[in-house]
Length: 171
Image (cartoon, rainbow, N blue to C red):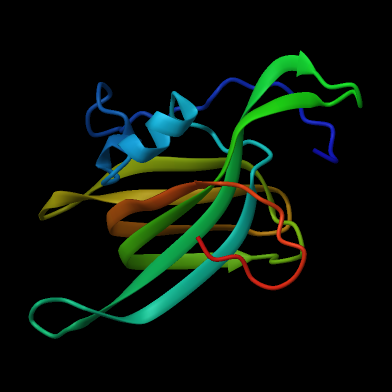
């Protein structure tokens, strides 16, 4: 909508720990995305709408830990072309992720649009630790790029996208 969108099949990252397990399976409530999109999307040409970094979450012990919330607009691109000459979009939605106990955080290039080439996930082992880390990479086309690692991840919600004329969008 408003841009020339290229066709691309959904990208799936396989875990190097166990090639038969897809990294997105590590993300709690991943079924919310699968129900809306029908598969795990690559978020190609998707837009990062919101990044929130928080250091005030607490473990049951009272210890603080950092987290990152990402809200990303994504869709399925069909082979149908609209009257305006653009590929028709289906499942146009905002996906809100929560990543907890984040480390190795790097972001660069925030601007007014923040278009992704892909949102990549990979599971990594940590020497001396049985629990894997989820490596997250925001590969950019235009604007924001970044990467970080998370001990836990979840899909908070998936909501239909609707343009907001003014002010922040809350889902």
